[in-house]
Figure (tube, rainbow, N blue to C red):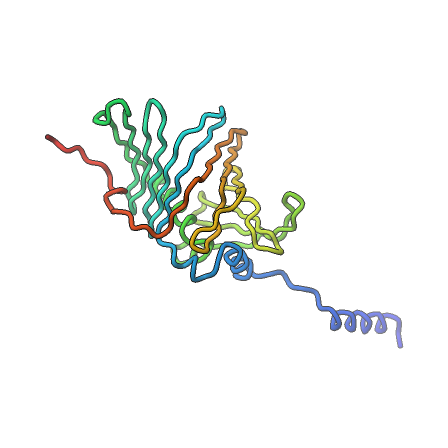
Length: 243
């Protein structure tokens, strides 16, 4: 037998005894990531999420924060500071920001957000309610990015593309499916720490956002409620009511 043929046969025998594992498909990675968070039944049952906690900005200041998400595309974030209350909200294709004087709640102003801001808030709402699946149904897609090592962990990289200028690049632990890190198209970095399990769904206790300039914003959750119906008026653009 020729040496080259002998080597080929030996290789085939080795492969048949222990075949090399092909790279997981996008669907397999997402399935593993979802399984880490909870069962399909528990994840699919989520229609609203209500977070309460605090937000810590770069200088160490901590402020109370209240965050609401409701399917399909409603969001409301309220930050309370000593000198102002700021509400940022999305209601379908309408988005707005309201600033209130806490010393005199009748003093407030509303700013309507532009189309780009609406698109980003819609993407953010989808990301918080759909747990990695179904992006193709809203016109986006998920692209494979190969393997990478993050914090010494072997990870699989997926890009969740809502639009050319709205992309969440996620690194999932190959073994467990746990989300290790998220990057945005601007280079900002998002990491999660700790865990809270509510109605069979795993959430982080802390979310750390690091901008490209190095500034950091940390949101710490004290309470998470699921599937509590939220009145539509909570998201509607405020209107002035005359006496």
